[in-house]
Image 1 (cartoon, one colour):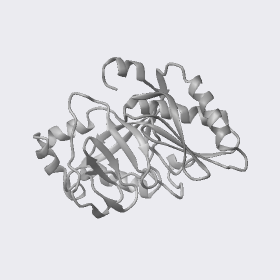
Image 2 (cartoon, rainbow, N blue to C red):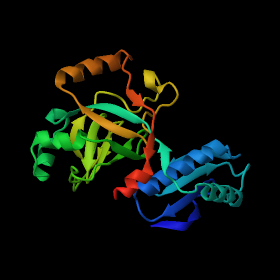
Image 3 (cartoon, rainbow, N blue to C red):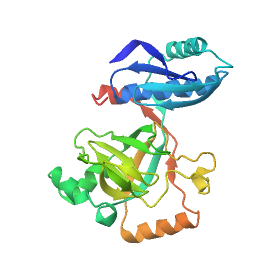
Length: 263
């Protein structure tokens, strides 16, 4: 459910949380993403940073420049300006991926859990675009939901989290896919691996000149399965700082998706 009027909460003396509803639907996520975009366009004095989630937007602000109450009024204006949300900007980004093997040790188990062959599991997971709803946990770490409704690959979550997950590992927990952008603990099934960075803290790679993070909320992902030979070739391109992602600018038609009963 999306509230008629959002809730505004303080998270310390320099953070405002604007919660728009209780559900974690694609539509609520799109609404948060659009609010974030409008706030950045408005260039409200004192706003330092934002963090968007499935159903809320956290805003960091300088309380010497703007008070909580005044920032809330600015957000109320943006909320009223939303109107009927039908489309938002959305890039399509292709990510090469290698399923199974030593880098995806849980893939065979995941295919068995879904009662499909490994080939079918790859087709289900990479067959349609997936939606980046949230980026967080560690820098650049995306939480990705499938846009397809007919078949979804499900992954069991570890009963006891791992203490180490290699950078580049693709995890699956429930229907949510993620990519571990730095070595860290984790509890999602390790089903695959990517040879490309999604986080470049020193901004050395060609697609990271403006930001250290590749993926943003509202992006759509196309996972492209590759074999070992192409994996090695792409790895070398990354080492030489020559790899460029396939990135297509576009818009996501929320209205059509909602009418299709998929939100």
